[in-house]
Length: 216
Image (cartoon, rainbow, N blue to C red; front, side, top):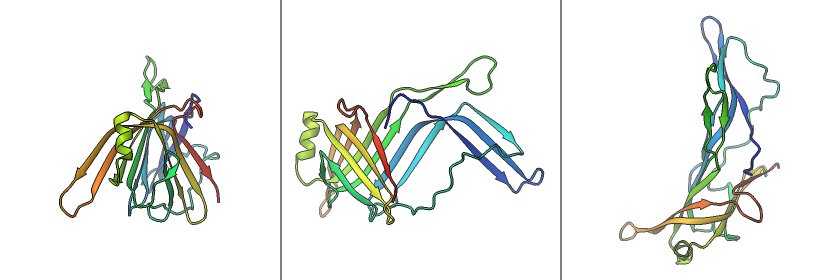
């Protein structure tokens, strides 16, 4: 969950198959996550990305100590057909023939700090945590539209799980709809509702976004 404790990481990128020396290694130190995005679209695999701002980078023919390196995952790729267990809005499961797509974005507003006598960044500053997203749904009734017009807070969560039982739950206990476009493409086409939302720090649970991981 978002909070005030800063986490930084080290990344090592290997360039192998070179003539001399045989390999080169870029080591990126003090990498702080600046943004994260995740997209769930019907009939597609789940996709996402991370963006980092780091403190410094070095190039060497010898690999840095990788004792604490994370191992490559052996679990399967998740898709939005069999691996999205549920989508809940205001505590009720709405995944059954309502939600066509769901995108979330997290921005930590990270910035590199520059100073004299330092190559690269001397430190990394972190700003506020912005959590936004888009919910694309079939326009079945006016319930979501009314919440948008009234500025009514609601909640949104979803669960993804692979065939072995490994699961993640993404929970935003307080969101508000910032935009709602109801579009009719034409005759014999479904009417879709595209809703932009923003998550806020919940006063009870004291977080904006929480990601819970469960091993099989």
